[in-house]
Amino acid sequence: MTAGTLSGPGLAVVVLLPMAVFEVFGPVPLALASWRQVRAAAERIAEAVPETIPDGLPRDEPAATGVGPLLGDGIELAGLAARWPARSDSDGDAGRLDHVDLRVGPGERVLVTGPSGAGKTTLAHVLVRFLDYAGSYTVGGVEARDLSGDDLRRTIGLIEQTPFLFDESVRQNLLFARDSADDADLWAVLSRVGLDGWVRERGGLDARVGDRGVLVSGGQAQRLALARALLRGFPVLVLDEPTAGVDPAASEALLHDLLGAVDRDRAVLLVSHVEVPAGLVDREVRMEDGRIVTSSRS
Image (tube, rainbow, N blue to C red; front, side, top):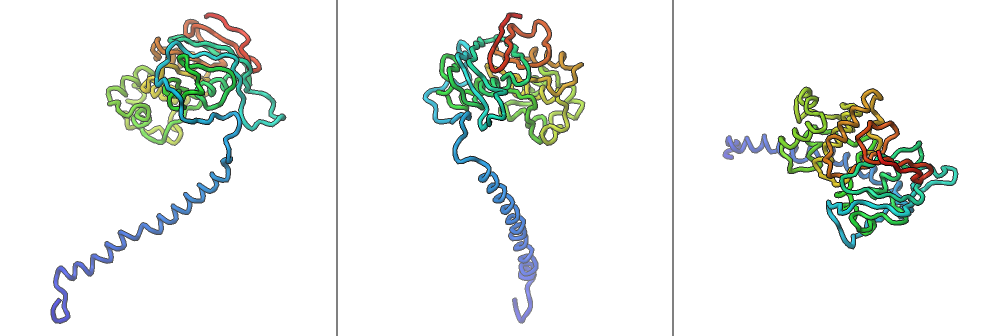
């Protein structure tokens, strides 16, 4: 600056400095508003979450031992009992388990049937330790309560009635199971579950599935969930009512495809209220009132 005038560089600084300051501080009000929303949501969650874990839910403390993704000689339940927490007397005992004895060996496929409220889904949730239990439940000879939840759930995978899908692409939903998988791995597993043609028609692996899978059907969601489970490599798969959201005319084909995609060396526990085609399972057990009342070979 000389004699009250600005040089070219000086003028540029004067003009651009306010713009630079605005770029730095402009997002601050938006960030503060977002922080207030997050804080309010966190406070609501804190108010809703109990101070102590309700009876019936597992306390995932550091494990004394771990099996990792190993099944050993299978899973075994002996005198197992469980029920959902915070149930009042008026809720009844629907869904409870009472003295359940069951063994599932490596590669065995067991069908669990029974009326609504018999305890089938409760059993599925106990197997992945979403619910606590009394009695004995061993995995490869190790008591499940002596394992960390992570160790147990590396061995036993649950595909629920309504699988959770992230509002991401098909690729990303699969990579959540194994982030080291390449595109060839993803196409291979999609082919195994019968979805490769459908994914190609939608534009490939970058096709979106929508919030909670809103852009896919119930059967397609089950197939995607199974593809994730196959990528993860669980020695045991628990399928909880996989045809619940599927048209009855397509349920048989879906069961054929789901079970046909699973390697024979992996154990499968299939919870189903619909008839399962012959040859898909090795054994059927029927539950009533929280107990296994019959067991027969298929």
